[in-house]
Image 1 (cartoon, rainbow, N blue to C red):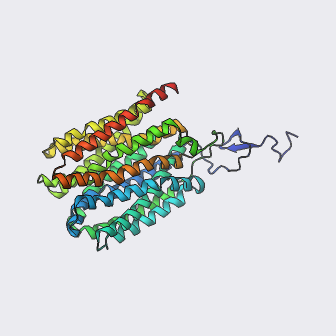
Image 2: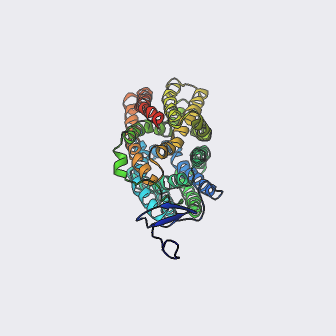
Image 3: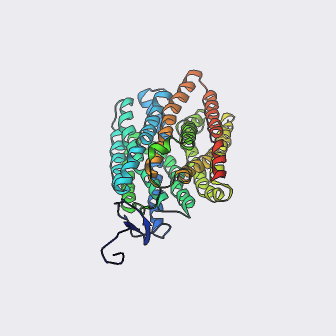
Length: 420
């Protein structure tokens, strides 16, 4: 009976040419290509283009900060809330979009993101009240990031085993390149056209690029021999709780410069385009950090490298604290960018190392809800400190403190890595 055609008495499942025991598994393989194959690098290209587009748009917000605040006579806290709400929505929706991508594939979800970012930016160009941007920009751009970032990062992770750190580093480097290109370009568009018309231009370009991403991306091969997956079990583990608390804190440090650094530089008498270029320097350095820290993580340990990225991220804020010249601010931007870029790029790799790649979309989405809290509360709180004191000093010290605290929280993870 075992050799009869059409019979499968052992209930074996076939995935990419291999046979694994899979009783009760009904999900068929979603692709004929294997992990680490040349075809897998197509997903890296899609992920790079998505992060380039999404974060190029959102991290250029610093260039729009002063024109929007001046248009509506708003203070720093109210204006920075646009960025905070956007980031919060993108992180909060991560578990939902991650689950949908795990179930239906990332292509459809990314296409939704392409539509929402275009509609959101175009609608923001027409607002007559600041609070309307909380809805148009917050929902439009926030939903787009949720639909594209977590699903595509999870897909890239699932397409690689041996070269995962490198693949994720290249994918996440799109954030840095997008920031480097888009922030100064946005400042120049604002100078030439005004902030409203600049958002219309960004809407058209971003929509087109994200549709290309949706066309390129595919769901990874099915991992039928993976252990039983339970997101409830994972979020209750000590490792996940430590990662969650740390992400909630160090995300404040990633948001602070993108919102306030250009305005701080202009307060020193630096011209608007040069001030916006500081965000571009962050993007440039973050690209180097994302690409260079993958090999270092392979050599010195993934979690150890991840922790030290966060430690450097916190310490470098002393350069901003005492930065009174453009050269000092450029130095801060470069160090901050390299450390922040490494931390962001290594986060999915750390999660995959600790919990595996099955259901990675919903795991990452759940983790990033901690980041949602940090970005929702951090910039408005820092903005309120600046408005109340008339100085950036307390806001910078607060950011430095919570980032160092996140490094301390992650110290027990090193012991866990040694055990593994």
